[in-house]
Length: 292
Length: 303
Image 1 (cartoon, helix red, strand yellow):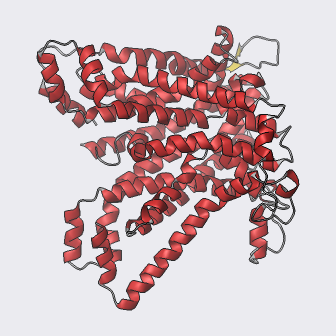
Image 2 (cartoon, chains in turn cyan, purple; image 1 turned 90 degrees about the vertical axis):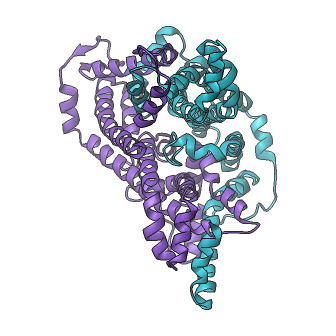
């Protein structure tokens, strides 16, 4: 395909070709600058002293690079490692719970041997689009009454409201790609359906399970409104929510420390993202984009 | 979608088809408990006067919350802001993402895969970090945005970005566009690579220029993915809380208050659960309209 698009340039005059290339490179340079400048600024600031970070004439490179901001996070009065752990645990648990509950539902919807299949599919799709804030007050009361407020399980309940419907649709996409003939052979051998799912389908879609789990984890990691509402004990707080809460205190002027904390918050998500980037589009649009 | 479901089921079906498959029951039960039940209680709360700060128990007041909403200036401001924020973000980032994908499609050589990996990085930055990062860059005194704009002569004095009721919402939209563009880039790039080679080959044989190839051949293939991607992002941005909350908390005044911020404030700062629920229900209806549109598009697409 690249060849063909290039020939679009080739059809033009010599000048048009080089001119087109030049415009293309300029636009790419702008895109790279637009993308990377904020990231660079975050990293650069995180290595500056508190004084240098908020100077009225900002320095492009840290004049005296220091890792004090990162060391400071470890020794701060705020338990940042605990926040990090809370985030990792609650998001990981939410991802596992969502995938485990979603697998049989996705399988049933993919094979669709029941009359309500379409309705159930739509219901799950619509739930995926629900505004979380509508659920907030009633969920808060439920967690209050069940004693789950201020617990990681309470957060997992919150994350499941968007993680589960998302996982069902994404997994359905992966299971759709498994040829039904493979299962039929196993059915002939007399395996019950749940064993076919367990022994045949799940091993085949194993990468899909991981991808789906990571997507749920990323969405949960990004979530701010549930931890802000369901967690009032600062020691149980997640990393993103803790950034918001501590900013009013500790980081009020300490932008270097803030940017170091922001960098730490970004790293796990960045790693997760590049692990699943290829399945990204299919996952987000539930198979509607690439026509699978 | 229904077409696909039917071909699957008609192939090996013998005898009676059950109404429900037990395998979907765990999902349905969980969703009923943590989504269905809360939505119903929100709907009930929306007809009640229920304030956690007041000692009196919930009291039925009919549609008073809804008529209050109609008269509430801030509600309409928040609704307008939400629409501006959502559609502004989606429109601009779809446009940039489309352009970027088209530019990079021509790229070959050693660096092209690097460039492709770099331009999607903002998608992997947590919303809270995006918000703090831009808040830092938008600082009036010593913020890098003002510094750069003054150095190149676009501004003569520092602009009060997030502290100005005119600039705050557009400034948040710019930050959001930065974070959202990679999504559209990925969607368009995937759609571009899905165009059959034969179609492009025939365009080449006809000696079609790049613009007419783009307009007549590629855009028809991109339309549906772009529409579906846009709807998804409309829904996501309608619900976006972190960026606005961290950057301005909806201020100055109510100039950048979106519905989600307003509902959150009503419920968890004023503890007026009845009124917050009424706003939530209206919002839900708006979103369901969008969701219905999305599902219809999916159906058209698959049949």
